[in-house]
Amino acid sequence: MSLRGLARWFCPHEYLSSPYAVDFGRLQERGVCGLIVDLDNTLVGYDQVVPGPGLQEWMQRARDAGMALCILTNNHRRERVTGLARSLGTEVLARAGKPRRRPFRKAMERMGTAPGTTAVIGDQLFTDVLGGKRAGLYTILVRPNSDHEFIGTRLIRVIERRMLRHFVKAGMVTMPRPRPSDGSHC
Ligand SMILES: [Mg+2]
Image (tube, rainbow, N blue to C red; front, top):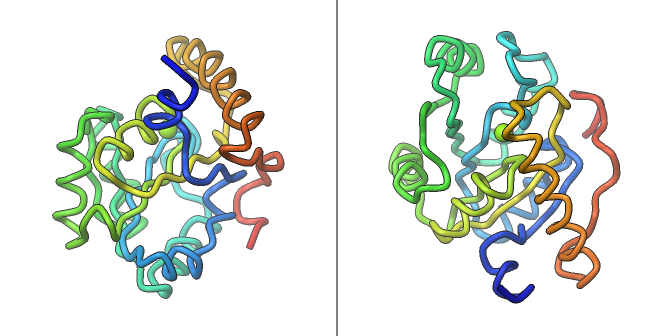
């Protein structure tokens, strides 16, 4: 597949250091009013069960900017996922099966948004970005917030890094600075 062909499905519209670097004002200007957000290694670390205070604040800032929110995760540990979503006061769809289109459509239904008014934020090209692009959304890739991952994911990271290097080199997306610690970025 050509680089352009790969980029069509895997190159994010934005590549940021973390969700804390998302510019809600700019998303608003694009007409975005719904955010589908990945959970593990995007909002919280792998296995984290209590969200940090910075995350609560970030979600409030998103809501204040008029964004509806829905967490979309492939994680199958429903208890942990629903517990986290409850403490964050947000909608959640677990065992989603990203990059299928259906869970993205379901999340949009929950938020009352459409593909043209929805963005997805996540740390993986093969689930968050590919799924978001298949569903016709604006896609924001963020750096993972921890190195603790399944062995399968670690292998995928090798391919992801390679693809991203090509996209950056071709000027299709900009490489972000390293991820700041959660809550320290405004
Ligand atoms: Mg993730």
